[in-house]
Image 1: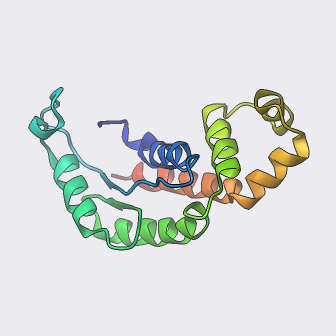
Image 2: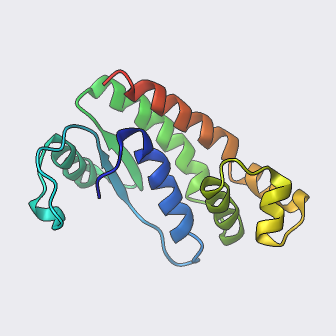
Length: 152
């Protein structure tokens, strides 16, 4: 899949939240940043440094479930440390927390009361789930990511 570079990390977190709504599934992803030389409907036919970096990043995953590889190894080091720290929380998301985080990502302009109405829960339940899920910290990490990749 090819996305705008500034959306890649949040899209990966959104996908993890969607999949983790099931107790038995999770996903491993390598995000490759770089140029796309050719975009094909068949992902195996697409090429460019973004695809090379994505494949290399995914192949290098060990116990981690998410990582980034860009043309700048010093940036990768910082971002991947942040991601590993975030994964300490993300990989433990419950079904409830995953659903609340997914909904919050899908509706960035909505406050907790509005999210509660969407999910038919109380505002305090939404607040607790977002806090348990480290939502504010994940959003700060995403903001740092966007700021950092703007220099690529």
